[in-house]
Structures are given as structure tokens and as C-alpha cells.
Image (cartoon, rainbow, N blue to C red; front, side, top):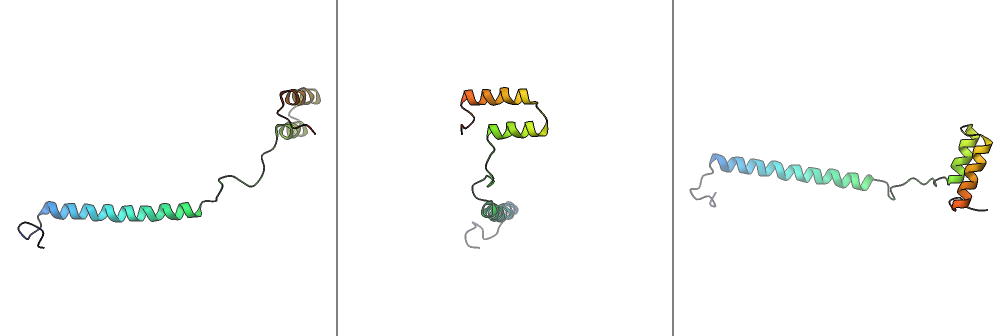
Length: 88
């Protein structure tokens, strides 16, 4: 090799070339893996199902029996007065 001062590579030169080669291929493989993962990720980041409204969640809790009718009506009134529940 004509670029080395004495035409011979010492032990440290071989070590530096070996580490450089391992780092190069490691970064190349890592870049490929990250590219494949990025291309296979679903776009949008959220599911297609719409989120339930607070009124729907309250109705589901009432249907499951977690709350009684009086508590359901109180909470529904509180939602309506705060403006969180959509009015028909």
C-alpha cells in the first residue's frame, strides 16, 4: 500500500481498519432495519374506530350496572351543563 509511510500496516492500523469496517457494516444494517420498520408502520398512528363520547361512556357504564339510574342522571346533567356532552 503506497499510502502508509513505510509501505506496511502496523497492528494499530489493522485494528483501526477492522473497527471501522465493523462500524460501517453495523450502521448500514441498522439503517436498513430502521427503514424497513418505518415503511411497515401503519400511517396515521391511530385506529380507524372513533373514540366514544363522554355521554356514550356513561351510557355504557349504566348498561353494565356499574352505576344506578340516579347517578347516571346526575352525571349526564353535569356533562350537559359543562358543555362536554353533545346536545341533540
